[in-house]
Image 1 (spheres, one colour):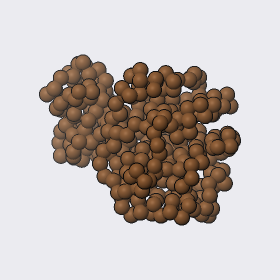
Image 2 (cartoon, rainbow, N blue to C red):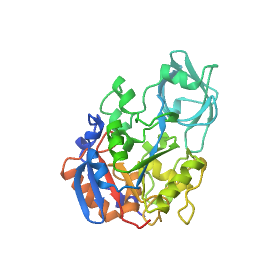
Image 3 (cartoon, one colour):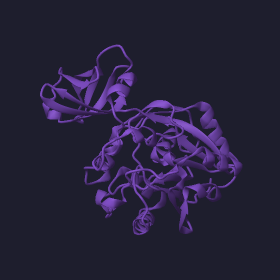
Image 4 (tube, rainbow, N blue to C red):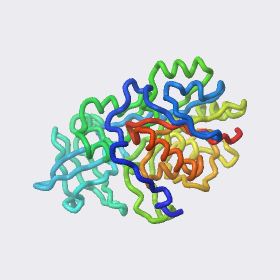
Length: 345
């Protein structure tokens, strides 16, 4: 499909620079077979059924944004994907000033060797020393806010907690699974009281999620790989949910992408551990999920393509036009949507 089919006019002031407080006070647009309803995240238990299951991503964002120098040149690095204990794939700013074999000093005793340049222009950085790279990043790195936020204000200490979900426990993401930012212990208790269960999986979101789609046609866009894991017992419980008529609702596009990567053609979810580069566009047949809770995404983004695949492009164009006209806040710190296509389980 043409990428410009997923374009729309988003006023700049619709991109949220801070999250709602409390987190579950954010607005939520419900889109299902009956149309659209303006609601709030706190209303979620009333929009789901007893026996449904919400699936969260438990990845934890690391301070993966680094600013350093190679001689007199400023070099910026955004870590994308772990290679091994000391080596990371990274997207480099001012890459023309960095050559293979040169060292970047990131301050605070943290430095890395530019070991290899990959075909997509990213670099393999090998961090010096014996301390775990996570320790080095806590010392020298900052939270990697999306460029649409970071370009408007500086990252600060509030972002250390704001840009982390309550489920975060597995270090490795360089972007938050932002739909889960809306959840609080109180909301989870209300969901449990309503007979709605929860499960977790792990997908370490990479910096590729921030990259624009530069191709003119979706068939020419290449997704960056991200590492994920679904445990066998988690997969078994999710299959059990559907076996008794419950719905599997992914919280966030990251959870959805990993569930679909782990699903067989008959919809059975299997254990999974490895990379996925699944790219979901209209025409895709969903196998593992029955709904999605997600934030509002940017024009021409792979995420808007994904929600259009789930609900239909015309439906999502109408939903986003409604959201813009009614003051919904977009992107990572913005409001939520609950998308229920109504397919039978």
